[in-house]
Length: 435
Ligand SMILES: Cc1cc2nc3c(=O)[nH]c(=O)nc-3n(C[C@H](O)[C@H](O)[C@H](O)COP(=O)(O)O)c2cc1C
Ligand code: SF4
Figure 1 (cartoon, rainbow, N blue to C red):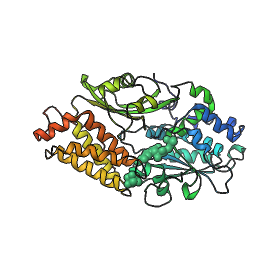
Figure 2: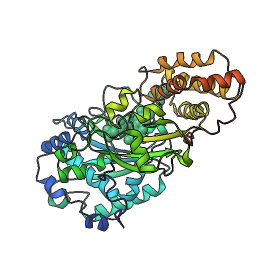
Figure 3: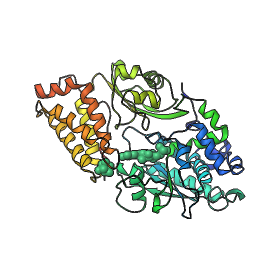
Figure 4: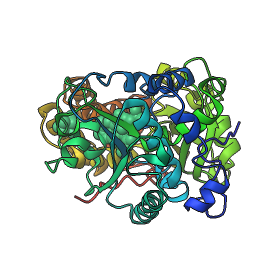
């Protein structure tokens, strides 16, 4: 089922301007918001069951309630617009087509948590989204929707846009905070968590663009209405970026709980050129891969996808057809992680490098019979032992591609080259980001 909450204004003329947004009811929640107690706003968001759309799926209202109430320090909001997970391109649409929904969401979050300054950390390569966002922030200041004493409410909210410089690791919340502070974008060990020690050592909420954009709908329609959509633990809708070998790649909004493959087929028209389905990545390149059978028999919600060993992640669905060469596909994925590792943790720095080196030599026809098991033996040593989860993000897909498509890896090693019909790396392009 396609349901429009986040994407409701995407097709509407001039929805990216203040005038267009307000004609469609935009900023309509503010009167209600300022009439509520901040704690009641947090309760409303908790009631909605909204979970973060940046990858980890952490409950948003709960995250806000971790921010200390009695502190002399300022508190900050960081809106994560880095959108670095390969296969993900949904925040870009919100930034370009509905930037005022982000600003309205920021006001809601800041009011609820007692924050006066919000940073939006936007991916450096996002020129057009930056231009739209910047124009929207300027319009909002001019109209008294940002700055001091918003609409006479006594609430002050300032928004600062910060452009990244092209490193995937700056999408990790603590890498982002370090980068924002002007340091090298290297994640910090946790604890302490950003809710206690975040930007400039002050309590900080980090939320994804889509998470923030869901707030105006929740405030306007109520948390209960949002929670009525989806499943018991996966509430509401999510934007899914669907790419790869499908007829109509794009961003599609869907309610949780539907069959994964049916959602893909209904949205995109199914596998391109009538080819057979081979595999699906359900949640970005960091996720384990699903075989065609698994993809046809799983529901699209956090728990069902997790039960397969994969994840909903940032909602980046990539579809592989029968001609996909899984060795090439894994080589592309591992090249990305080896390039993007920040190098602080040996299991990540060494593990991503060696996984890439080995798959690369297999691909070049120079693999040794023991290489497949060697790769499988490296993966467990990369799980759960590093500062951030980038190491896991390389090891989990590596082990799943090898275990589920082992004969293809063996064919490279035994014959020194791939079977003739294996043509492409799955229509995915996970080129490492330029540093
Ligand atoms: C290596 C790495 C990259 C990440 N990149 C992004 C990103 O580009 N955008 C994002 O919103 N979250 C990203 N995350 C997740 C953030 O750390 C964080 O969980 C998220 O921004 C929290 O917002 P949410 O609760 O609204 O999902 C990344 C995490 C890791 C470990
Ligand atoms: S896991 Fe990798 S990317 Fe993350 S902090 Fe350690 S070395 Fe850096």
